[in-house]
Image 1 (cartoon, rainbow, N blue to C red):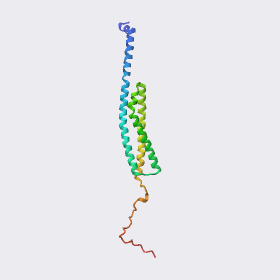
Image 2 (image 1 turned 135 degrees about the horizontal axis):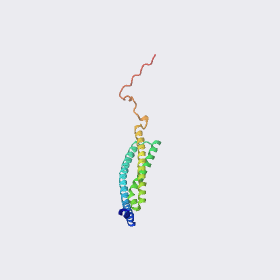
Image 3 (image 1 turned 90 degrees about the vertical axis):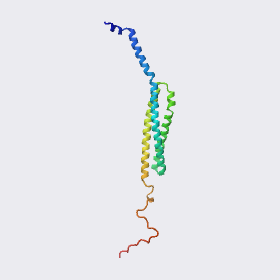
Image 4 (image 1 turned 120 degrees about the vertical axis):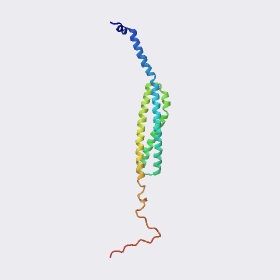
Length: 175
């Protein structure tokens, strides 16, 4: 056996290698919590901007819907869908607003990771559903704006004669 091979087999060297590996692994875990919190805070800021955009879109949809003022069953369905999407939007905005307080309560890496994953999934799914509902309501509004509210309110193709003009001649009956 050479001197180097015998040195590697001594209990002191093995212990040193094991302790070094454990200390390096422990160092990596201590920094995970601030990194996860920073990532979660960045995600919340990103979604806050998205939710603000969706809120402005909801305000625009509300104005367009109120301007047409249609009251039929289709309008009630669109209104119901809009109200549900707006409620979901407000719920997500509240969750994002409370996220700092919620993350402050979490001290364990596992709990923080679960919270981050849950919020990420909830926000991604929620914004997608809200967008789809808003798209549907906007499509309905566009169709309602394109349709005349009543056919009888349309102007006739040939306007009636003015009151000052002589009556139109009538054709002679056929003999």
